[in-house]
Length: 231
Image (cartoon, rainbow, N blue to C red; front, top):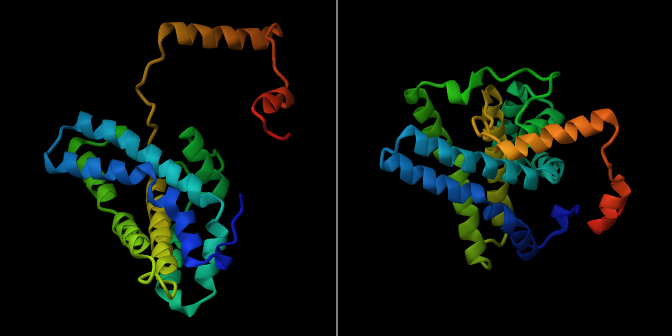
């Protein structure tokens, strides 16, 4: 559903922010911080990185639809000049297309028309891997999120005068910077996971049925009807 962010009251905006501020990414980050503090081994960090990345994809999903609206708000006021400069810096070095960024999050693979990531996360030496985890866990995004959450709890009157929206726009720009940073990294959270033999066998059977024309394919209209969706 498309929302007119510019027309929202502070209370409405705070409600709209709730699923974003409570995204699982922020809980995963706290676990990463704890693991780093106890000097956890690489295996433990890799396990939590999977959750962190899935949380990042969830945050990106929440911000995809309002991205252009948020950028237009930023560009419409000199009040946000520092944030404008940061967005320009991101756009100046961004390598992927909007479709390519979505494809990476959905399939863990970049579009062939976009530059390919140069760094494979699983191939990093232990020191470089830990350094990457520390960089991600200490990204400015998380401090920005804490500020937004604090303002939500004190609304009103602390968020009057657009403080909440301004704080969220800072979070949004931090997200854009994180997204751009990750462009250089190839990371597949499912890499190394093995399919159970019975699942692999069923997948091979399904492919064979489609190739031979013996598969019973369900029309997309019927699937939509069963799910209660309009098609």
